[in-house]
Image (cartoon, rainbow, N blue to C red; front, side, top):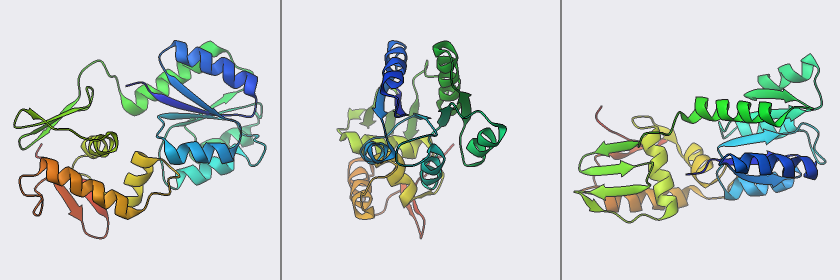
Length: 228
């Protein structure tokens, strides 16, 4: 699956050049020129990395990153002509993962993007398969089988299951699941998450009323409980 990158910068020409370069190296890129458009995109999609300018028309990249960090750990690279030590320290302190001063070369940008993607998501040469009970989830191929019979899941059902698999045996808050699966600024209600969990249980659990794997964690959210 292509890694999704969101560029938030009001320099349309620069964003276009960066998009062309990143897409030529196998990334899928979306651009936003201001925070309002960025929030719209983040509410509707999930991204693997954000390239963020500091000086935006309607806010600062610092403020946007602060808001994002309340609900998401998506990697953020600040890219800005503001190069003072204070700005760089501020960028890291509020949750930025890297800081690239403008002007920069496309080669250096690609190197930093690749490195941060590797650090965050690992290498993808091998298939990632998670098994629990009679269920086999192939994260790489986006397929699911139960008792060796294919199970049909919607795109969102699979995304939710894949996130639970990636964080197996970890109690995940409902707002965290919604932010990571539906988008950082999604307006999705918790009832929608509850319904999707029920659908997964109906398709994957032997007894959906008494789930053995997709567990409810009281006053927290949900967890995929898997024997190591």
